[in-house]
Length: 263
Ligand SMILES: [Zn+2]
Image (cartoon, rainbow, N blue to C red; front, side):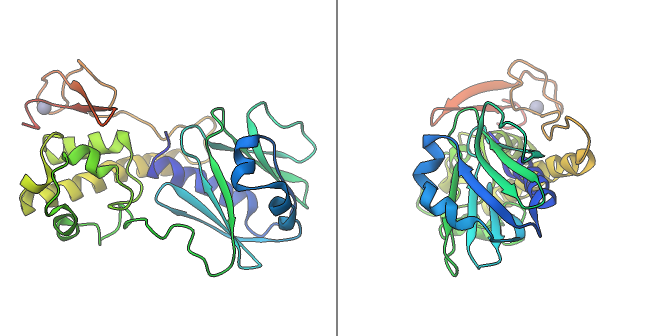
């Protein structure tokens, strides 16, 4: 599931593929995206021009010359594919954006869970989203403010996008390994020093993945997912102390951690 670094990478692909271009047509090819982008709404996009593509958390926002915003959320398996308008859409193409210059940006999504929605001018499509995980405002003070009186364990708490935008299951585990914090620790039991370590761990994990995305951007078949420290490494040696990485389940998701460093 794409998290902040992967969506940042995708945002660049979309930006390169469509900023400054005029839409010839937008078509949803599957019932799922039609729920949020009905044909009658998609048709109104013809003739509009894309002026900016930005990322916010795991979301992409395509700003249009008319002031409207196309909100794209990949969720599980969404990805972009850039082709020619004349080509036959790929098997899992769910929404195709055709431009007047003969190019196409297609949303590929095997699980068909991605969301594409059009918002009118002046509307914030993401009003409940917390600060960016990489932002300065995401710090110990912010975490103290939000964790006071809450009893949830730290790892599932980090997945709440209202607390911090862009973190998913992979980087939550990675961040807590950098922070040397037990993922099962209750948030109300963490000191301000520990919470500062959590915020720093989040930024470090994301910085590493963003740097990788930066290095590989434009390279063929590049992936932003590199060598993880704990994620998907059950039984592997901790890169700090050598002890076997443990996997547990929290809120129905896998959590990976070092039982020694993160005790
Ligand atoms: Zn360790």
